[in-house]
Length: 126
Image (spheres, rainbow, N blue to C red):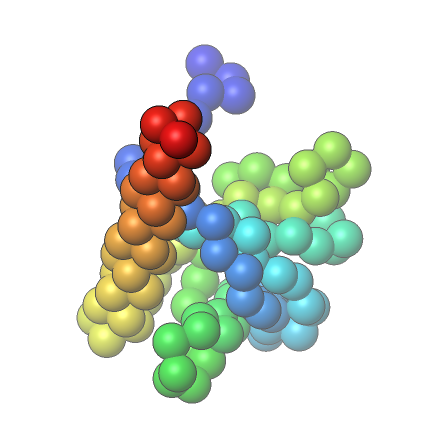
């Protein structure tokens, strides 16, 4: 079914820089959200759905950027302003680092949601 979400893990809002290109990461973009297996990149540069691209991820975890590959799974520059990518061909160290970053984002998002719920509950009770 076309348009159906096929994500295996939760999508979390995140913002950091990325560079991408067909052979070398030379075009800039900004990551808007991440899942364990992919990310959404805001960009004005069109990419072909199904193509393999090279990424340089500037993950905000205090370490240096790293390169990996991704499949372009969705690209609609006009309506959504970017492309959805499925990560591919990461080394064990990069995969572990990405997973650690992702799960930290999940934990931070849940903590923030609990705090907002507590504030809303306190406001109603007052």
